[in-house]
Image 1 (cartoon, rainbow, N blue to C red):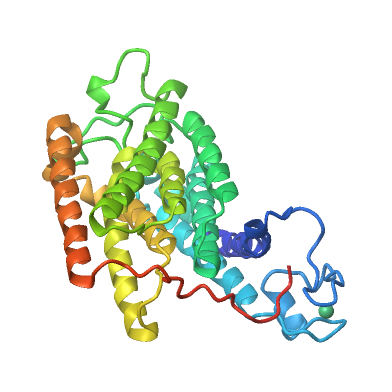
Image 2: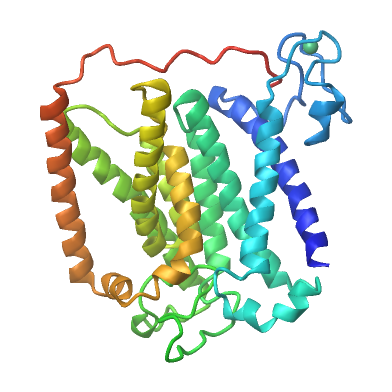
Length: 369
Ligand SMILES: [Zn+2]
């Protein structure tokens, strides 16, 4: 029965992927995503409802417009398939395997395997699936246009803050589970940790209250935004040229509203390592080009979501996030190291010439918009 739900989630992912296709084709040009319906980019004939089915539509049309024969890019199909697989994978890990280690799901393991899904399990999955959908959209926009549309990130942040208010820690549990001898230090919820240590929360911010939820989401959004902006500023100071788009800061602001500030900080560091990896791969395959940072950040966010239950159990990480002076010290040392690294980059590679507009040529090829 659980696998029936998995198939259902796969289909939902395909529909969302289809919607993401519309978004990435229109939003960077500030067009409406609701009107008009999908149509061919060359002859402007509307695409029939049947041909517009996610995943199947592309093969029904054999990748061509029914009226004029214009070729549609295979990326429409790939985005739908990728989103469907990503949704199914997330559902399997979070609900099937309880990778978030939620006590609520652990207690209902048997029912879930039989396919009797509690509403809270759906809330957990759909909350992170929403984040995943926003991250896929921003990543694809960044890959295609080297720019993240503000409309997506601001919309994502608002959605994140509203959800944060309703899904306050320790949701889906009503009350925090007291830690056992080998258990996690903080009872894991959909928002893994509240805005500050549960024992030190002010009385007007009890567990499960909307005040706590909103504060958790808001702190995440602010930390996500500020981290990226500070890094951008330091890089500009040391390197002598702009290194990051402001859109990357907005991606982390959005993710922060969905995660809370502690995982957001970790997600940034994971994202930097992913970006280094992507950068080396791109350097080998295509030479020195402008690198889209948003996809790396997105991978960092989703990885962090899955590894946080393990990482947050290690005493050092717990200490780091519970002692303000320690955290401040680590951040300060990191900032100084980063500033000197980017200054070294300036010494090694020299000042950037003004005509650095590589990788800007528009991707040719037909498409439906
Ligand atoms: Zn056509």
